Image (cartoon, rainbow, N blue to C red; front, side):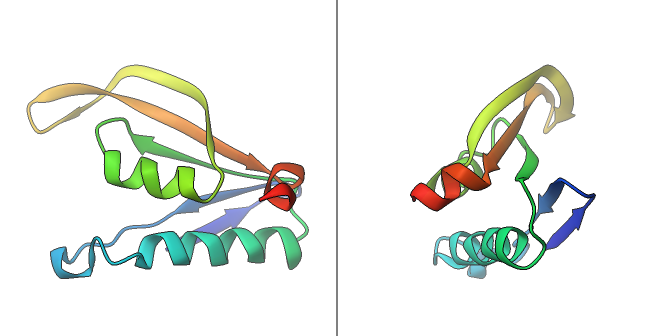
Length: 99
């Protein structure tokens, strides 16, 4: 997990490498805690991330925590023998408070 930030925006990243650690809700829980920390402790206005468009598991995890797609880089990554999109996602403090 990582959370880097400037004065307004935090940039989030997470990787659950071990197959045995997936599909147990760990990612969803950690993302929720990182968002809470970014807004409550760091006083951020928004949190953003980028994700491989083929990574449906990660996208669902982010959406469960209130992230919404805010941009897309079409066919900007070559992964597993194919070009894929990179999705940019964000959550604003005001939207997080409503969740």
